[in-house]
Structure formats: C-alpha cells, structure tokens
Length: 333
Image (cartoon, rainbow, N blue to C red; front, side):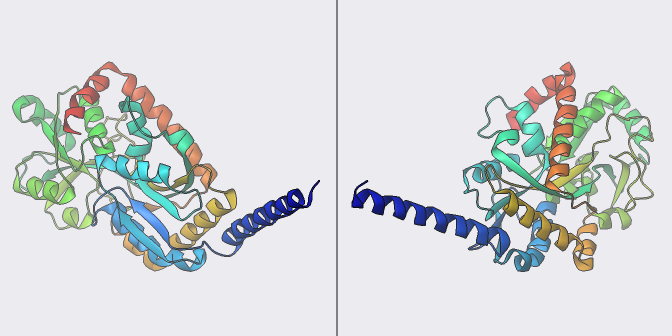
C-alpha cells in the first residue's frame, strides 16, 4: 500500500471515529443545537398547549434549548411531511394527534409519507375523550333526546368539528352509523369558531375535545364522551358505550414521533425527558386542565398502540357506509 493510500485510510478512520464520538455525545450527554417540537396545528390548540408546557421542562434533560414550531396545514399532514424530511438526529420531533398517522394512511390514496416506515414512535403524551355537545339553549338534554330530534328534523341533522378529515370527523360518521341516522358534517377552521357557533345555536351539535370550563360553566352541554369508562375529569358525562353506542368509544391522543433512522439511544433520551416532564405537578395540572389524561409510555408501548389503532380504523373504513362518507368529506380537505 502506498503512503497516499495509507494516509487516506487513516483519515477515513479518524472521520468515522469523530462521527461516532459526536453520536455518543448526543446520546449520553446532550443534543447538539436546538430541538424543534413541531406541531401541525395553529397556536392555541390543545396540541400546541401541551407542546409548550412540555417544552419548558425537557430542555434541561436534553441539554439543548427547545423550540415549539407550528406548521399547520392539511389536518397535520404538512407537519408529518416535514418530519419525514428532517435529519434523524433527535433535534426534530413531531407532536401529533392520531388522525395524520393512523386515519390519513387509510383514507388518502396519495400520501407523501408512510407512518409505519417513515417515523419512529417516541412516546404517547396524553389521551383524552372526544365529546358530543350541544349548546346551552338546546332542547336536548341527553344523547337519546338528540338522536330522536335528529330523526324528527333530518334537514337539521348535522354536527360540527374543528377539522375536516380528523378523528373528530371520523367519530361523527361512526355515530351516524351506530344510531342509524344520516348526519351532515360541518367543518370549522379551529375550535374557537366551532364553540362560538355551538353556544350561539348556529350548529345543533359538535364533536371535539372541549375545554372543561365551557361545560362546567353551563355554556355547552356534553351529552356523551368516548372511551371505555367515564373520564375522571368528566364524571357526570356518560360514555357512548353506556348509552348503547359502543362502536363510538375511541379515545384520542397526542404522541411524539421522530424521523426514521433516529438512533435508539436518542429516542430513549427524548422519551425519558418527556416522561420526566409529565411527572411534574405543574405540568400535570396544566395538561389536565385541557381535559387530557397523562400517559407517558415507552416507545415500544406507543408503537403497539399505533398498530392496534390502525387495525381498528382499517376495519371501520372497510365498511361501505363509512367509505362513502370518507369520499364525501375529501372535498373539504
């Protein structure tokens, strides 16, 4: 071997060793440079609030400043595409609800990412029920009353949500199927105008993760919530299951994803920082005020949950009536 070849080989070894040293330092000490928590929705929503509360607490454990970056658009899919294109170094993670990573792959023939191959689950942050509500002046005081009213007034049988193509929208279609009524979806651009119109009577019902203070203050009336059992935060609100509509029982959640190829030790480091933040009493209080329940599970547990949810919604989408509904609502996207 010539001297030049030997020199090139030694240089390659040095570069490789340096790269390994940087990777090790990121995994065991801190992440180099700021960490972006990407949220696919505008500021002020539940996901944004959760991201900002967590961001305040994870900077220390990660050894890097943390920035919340809102990238709204296409029901969270714009942010998911951004994550796919980001470097797999742990410095860009996505805080997302279920719809962009579970429902979108089932309802869009052309999607610029694949949830099961382009992302790495980090942790499920929170879970929360989705509730069906009416305005304070509605004549309906129970879900049974509302279903009967819809059947008696088919031209007014509608529900609003804060986002077309979301799990909220999907839940409304499931409700219509379970109750044997045709419900028209009324999409809003965010939760604030939805609640305003619900209180004012411009829409007869709505599905969302409503802030608890609106229900407690009597401005809206929650008739039922999703989940296997009543939420401890909403003990006076029955579940859909309790009132005989068991298929409408899916909880919503926000989870953390990293780009494919992110080293396992980096994923574990981010997960550990998130779980530690969720144990903070102040963080728990602020998150529970949004109506959410703390989860903070492991990457493996979150991956298993995503797989299970995908199987459930795949079965629902396969039913002819909901498939037709999905085709219909795409005109709003």
